[in-house]
Image 1 (cartoon, rainbow, N blue to C red):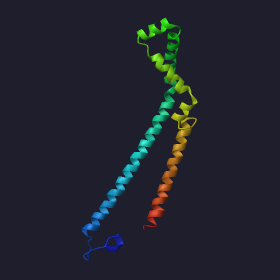
Image 2: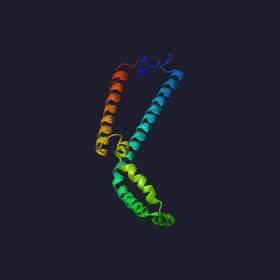
Image 3: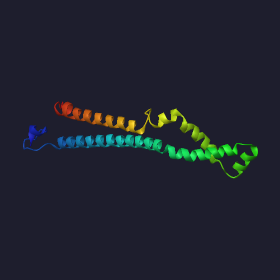
Image 4: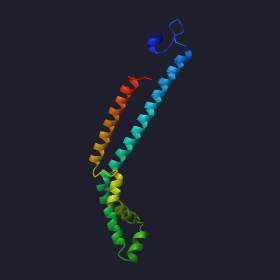
Length: 151
């Protein structure tokens, strides 16, 4: 289509001016850039959620390892000579493990990793519902607000 049917005024010969064509190409490129930026941030957000849920799901296995190191701390803390023997053997993992055990056993740490939800399943349910809501809202915005009312 040419002229008013395509939304671009023609120069009388059925062709759009160069300025109008460049403006149209600019708007197309701008829309593509906005879409890519939104998709990038969405993937970053989903990756962050997945990483956090994965850490929380692997915690039991890590906690077993930490518990072994915590027992090492208990063995090293029996008296001064035992502590010096452990440190001379290079057994610092038990000292670090005691802090990690304390941090991951607390209810606050679990809430932080799961953004306040009780289980990873509840977290993913909320993320899924939010994505469905965002897609529905975005689709209605594009078609109703922009499509039916282009001005």
